[in-house]
Length: 96
Image (cartoon, rainbow, N blue to C red; front, side):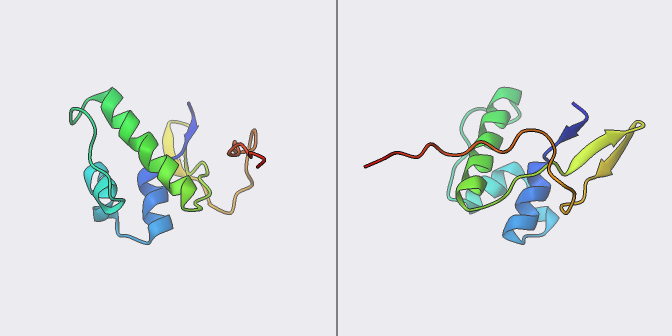
């Protein structure tokens, strides 16, 4: 993976909070959620990050790639850069 979404950056930018308020447990707490699982378990951390991402999408955040590796260096991707790849999945629409 040479490109990814740094949820901490996206969270801070979307909810307008400083970097020190983007630790996993703090993000969950501010969203009214509790940590599920064992702290520092890679699988449990991933599940909790996914819960944050889902909530951000529900709140209207447009999650975009915001970091990448180029020539071995970590680089920030501009939020104004065009979207690459497939469009973001849409929630299914149900007819009444």
